[in-house]
Length: 177
Image 1 (spheres, rainbow, N blue to C red):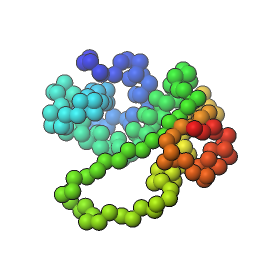
Image 2 (cartoon, one colour; image 1 turned 135 degrees about the vertical axis):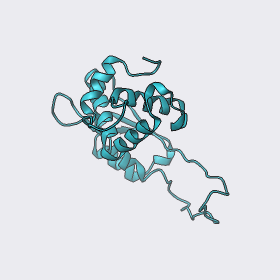
Image 3 (tube, rainbow, N blue to C red; image 1 turned 30 degrees about the vertical axis):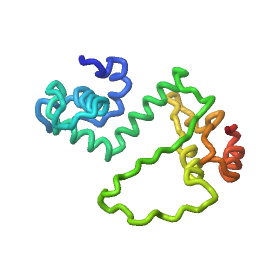
């Protein structure tokens, strides 16, 4: 097992949420090895073709990552990890922070606009997104019951400050800063 590979405990948590192994595939027909390869690539940023041989064929690892992205496997894994963490008390529901980021493309990027889009002087671009972001908070309960969807407090910079957002948070009994 390499540094950063899944521990036995982590593997036991994730394995039931992976699709069944098919009959096809060569020597790397093992989800754990492939998942470790995907995690290695995400952690290091190496190109797919440069994955170490211990993870099997780079193409198998890439194809499984692509397939799992399309069929919802990654979302199921995320929910399983979140539910386990919440059950163990490792999710802090007292505060959720919201923020955005922007990445400027180089001026010679293909398809770049020649003029800047008009941005209204009043209001911020982040403000309309707060409601959608908070509405997507959903951590399932592994022992049954409704998923947890409401943090105690939301904090954000002034780009999120609007009457609409404050009214929405108050209606859900979520304090805000």
